[in-house]
Image 1 (tube, rainbow, N blue to C red):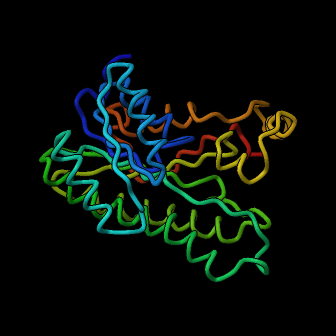
Image 2: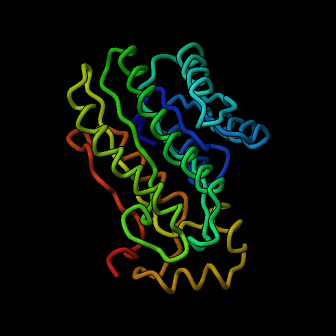
Length: 255
């Protein structure tokens, strides 16, 4: 590793599994001090242990991203135990594939709170924390390919991820005008083989092969690919990049 984020404090939500877990480990390998958050305490403890085993620095903080009080606690813990906050990765999300007519108000509300309200609070309070650090920072909002295009039977998911896309662009404009400035970008994964997908469709090699065959690059998306993209958006290599939609989907959206 090259120390691209050496000693920078980054908060990663939904860090107990999937994209968030791989991202937390990747950032720590690059020298970041990572505040890993999520609802799964056992998963949080294990990712922190894995980071420590590689001589990285991380803490776990239980976190409901839809609650402002939880966010404020995460930030206080990060600042107190790790230092001034440089970046936030709003990765925590909920996934639902269900026809519009069968989607309940409660299900839509739950999706909205986690996917949209969680990202909103992460950006708003992330701005405040980065300002206290006194140095420029970066925020990455994990949206989805389905936040750019429609997908039959996933109205609630597409609507909430589309909202994250719009939130990101407006926040990028406001972030650029702040002192110090904060870059804000969105990441748009395609089908990534994580518990979010396997929990909905099943953990089956034939299904993974089918997803790969349906992708122009003919490979299944892996959490590592997303971690690499997030590292780019947080690092100095993207110093002139803000307000973009970085789509990492094996070409699915172009097909």
